[in-house]
Image (cartoon, rainbow, N blue to C red):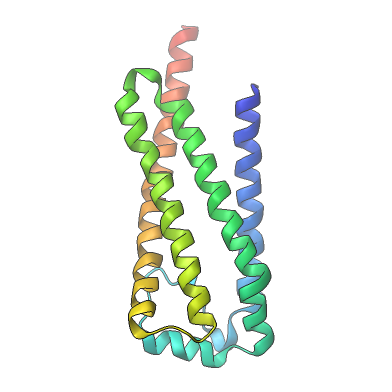
Length: 171
């Protein structure tokens, strides 16, 4: 196993651990009255739903969301995007240079959407958001999940392509 492959495995493990920690914090500490965190709302949310969630949060929950949760929710997309980009880069191959470069855009776009969403969610949690800010944050939430799905599919394609290329060299 090369150093690059070990680094990708480490990145994948780090992303998984961050995701599990975020899920545990969400489920056990940030779901007042059964309301879920903004990041988990795959279909988005409107200003009324956002305000209902804010009203249900205690001061301690809000502090957790803006503190440890936000830190992990910043680290997670950076590590995940880097890992997905590495997998795509290694697997897409040099013969498909243009495809590889285009495929690499997806983890980058995901990262940009997620970090921008996180910044807007912090504005919402501080009670400083307009309706337009909430609608934009919601659209970014939906967009990031869609782009992440595409990035993950591209990573699976690249891994399969890389494995097929390796088998072709052995034959």
